[in-house]
Length: 609
View (cartoon, rainbow, N blue to C red):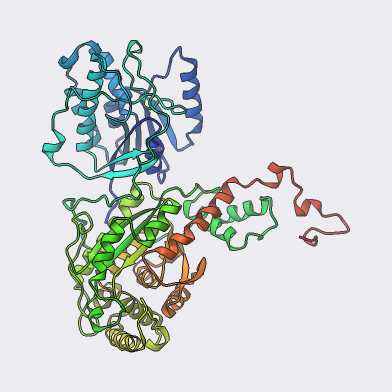
């Protein structure tokens, strides 16, 4: 489960947000080479002012290299993360070098493009390349315009072929594109198609400067994209053909380091300086401190890329009447979530979070992009047999870890785990009872709403499952295999890997928190990277949170699952960060703070609020 370098191509039109998204993918790196391809000298005073502003906004992590020789620049430091912005400017320079604007179809840049791709393939650190996508802005229907269009299409296709990830940004929304087969990648470009290439976006010097010569200037694109340009929700991005993670030693985690205590101290000090009475925002203040410590900086960066992953699976114990709904509802709800119609989708859309549903063990056939990581159909009945084998448990753990890695590598800054599976509160309660050493009657809840007879059947099932779980209580992997199932196992891997990658997670209800209990056994200390989004009505949930020493943000008597409670808590977490970033200090606002206002007759700290 070693870290791996990722090559990412980010495509988009003018003012689409592609450059900002590209920068976000490298947010976690402490050193970044910024390979700027735009001209650095010009008689255009407005252009030079844009360059100045652009340089000033890059922080100390960036080393700016302004060059048109990308291959040499990449080979000079293959072990340092790089951001290339952008390929359109690089292509313009290559066309200029061979006087190609009037050459029509005779121009040949295959050698230069192949050399660039070879340099990219040799990179051992993450690299992000920004490029205009043919078709997303206007280019005049002239010979020069057609030259640029045709070569840009060839360039983008060649670079995409050596990249692990290709993303399209439209109106600030990101769509990860599946890998194409070789035939699709080498399909000829229609030379008679409408010509499209980007112009320079205001405020983004060095980016998208890909116009043909000034004599054939590009018209301005429409100021606003169509209202329906962005999808309502982000579809799952992983094609079924992509290589699966290696399950070898998936249960072995490196030591988890805690959030930065020095930064937490600095954040608390900053809270005291903001224009409010100390502690007046209650726990919201401490949440902001926690995020600062997780990010290792104060003030923290805003949380702008949240992602929800819903782990889905069926459970053999559900056939024993422990749920109010039949098992086939799992597959139906997976399809509903994938289509954007579930409660979690609606809530996530409201707060700007993406939703991804993953079929780990649904007892039905689901779409290939949902079942890429699928371990098996359903699980064994935990009352009498293991839910999954040890080998399947390793596969599920590896899947959860890989899903966390993919999201974090793509720029996600806060994660939420959700679940979908009829009967899944039964194995979750077994895990809570076994690890917290409680009796079944203390922890059994109504789940999706079972009646009294169903509650008694569920209690008996949990009793039987706990009897089997106690035999492997000190072996987290065997425990998950015995009573957890593939979905809870993948969730545990996801949560532990997020902690290892120093990424905060908002936990949802009893199922996710039960998986978190096991994740903390796999990776001790992981719980310091999590916050409880809410308290559900399930008795086992309160016990699980106490076990992890987590205090819920919300208590709304919810029991839906899907990640819904955690998504509702997300705006509070985001607001706690925004307050630390944007709220004025006493000095900035010219407001006298409490201690400064104290007189000799009234010592500091004794004034009224």
